[in-house]
Image (tube, rainbow, N blue to C red; front, side, top):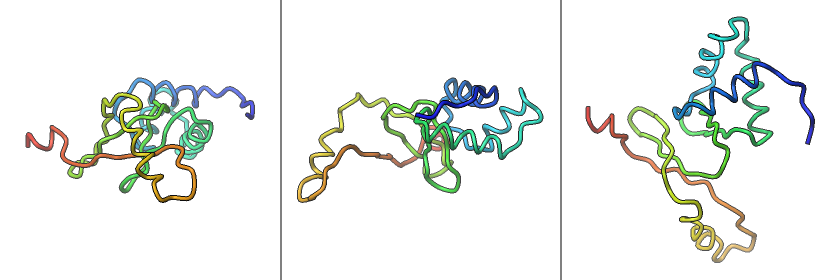
Length: 129
């Protein structure tokens, strides 16, 4: 693994993502980081987000128009609202859906090593509207 030079902006991005459950877009991360580092560029935020994803420190959720980012890089499941496009973590026990790997592997000549699953529907805020 490559040793990276310490970056206050990168650490600030990681800290922000670790404390939010909102799964923000890069633009939202940029607006938040600008509150602390007013001279930070959008390009710097994008580069650091991509670097953190590549390093496995955060997760990119590529669904819809804009990528969203999650400070929790451990395997877990997400719900995507079809109305407001919010992304929420689902509280599913680790390993509870591992049988999907076995089902997917039946009749497949390769080796299934994992899966990524998204659940879709309306979030509670959209239902209450």
